[in-house]
Image (cartoon, rainbow, N blue to C red; front, side, top):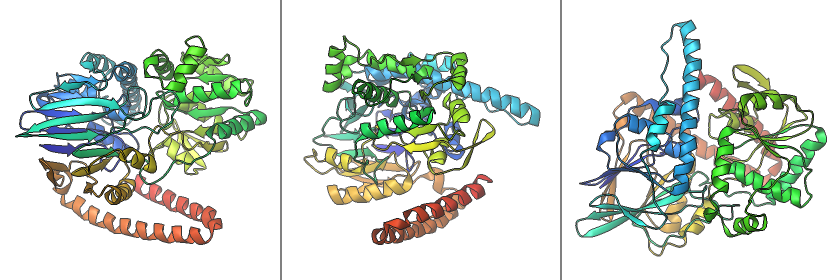
Length: 535
């Protein structure tokens, strides 16, 4: 058999892994690339396989970077089943049409601009109709049932503890007289998250395909509730709004959970809490009506509040664009939660445009911000950002509430792997930025004593029983110019690691240097962006 890595390879998004045996072809996930323009352009490439030849699609969870290209896949000829859990199916029922709506809107804006300049207008990857057509192919699968996909392949879902409905996937492949087990972690959740159950333990697997989003760091251990209360109270005292870019699925509901707790404990004022995202409103409804997925603490709250997990008197849901625009003239401080979580699309852009320049306001990030996203630029200290074609000064107080991520960190993944009773034959590290994945793979090699590899886009793992080797991507290596570029970048990577080590040694001696180091790094980063963006 072989695995071709067609996404989430040295990048966090675009999850897609093609698994081929003599009789079967399946893909695990079919996700959209997100982030900078260079990365998102990959969404427009033709699939590196014939969609009509696939036996099945195995979907780990509903996030768009895992599910977002399924409508394109079906539009291009796939007519099989998309297997997923019950809640994943329900969430995709709102996320995929929303993704299509954004693409149609972006295409319409581009058409108006390009018409004036005479440029060709790009078409949306898929339409809202395409998204609803795709949903007809979804088939829910219960956790823990072993489902036969074909004569030689079966799968089993286990809880990943990431967002509600998220699963890791065990794939069983019959080869000659052996049954080889591969475990795709999907996005592995952080333990002790509100509402969501813990990730399931694993005992064995022959091959592990594991995420590494936070593979080079640990989530900061601190009192998150106290920090959240402090941010809210400080912003309220200044008379400003607290703007929170939040993912519609998962993060929004977690924040509501904490707001409810803080209000009940009289730690924050009963100020307006506004969910300004039709998608987040629908997602909240789906999550709140699936109590069978709650963890033990959430189940207790649900029972004690007359079958209501969230019961906040000042909570308001904003549906229409007119209601959303009216929020710009609020005469009292409010908490406004809006999508998207990386601040790269949706109504959050309007709220940032109207609040980012106001020093009395605050912007709170509570999740991963991909390179190239507006959220990442703001967090990295940009003084001015461009929002909907307008330059906006960044004068609001910027907060990064760490530890709210739905992803497990380095140590939490190691703790999860402690359940393994035997060493895997191979470990493939995915879903991480290139430098992060390299660090994590090296650490895994030491901890597990297993061979590890960080694939490039298009690399193929050729697996024969318990032996494997890598065939490097022909997609990349067949272009001579790219080979030269890779060589140049390897030299830069070597310099990066050397400087990183020297800077860490400097900080070990003198922590007061951190501010100056960050200032210089931001200057270097800005210089690189200005030069490379011009390409």
